[in-house]
Length: 63
Image (cartoon, rainbow, N blue to C red; front, side, top):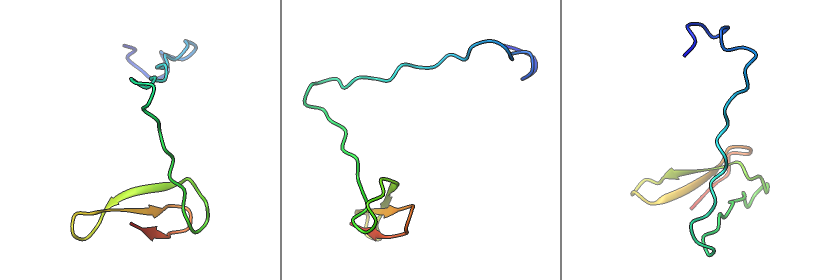
């Protein structure tokens, strides 16, 4: 490990390869905001422990 951040300059950075799905039926579903269509959606806990979503682009929330 370099003693300084500058000691590591000039060398390539190691990047992890993306993981593949374990099974062919495992798929990733992207959520989109029903209000603005943005994919910038965060999953949050609701008041009673349920799951809700909030769009970080426009602020719209839904469950």
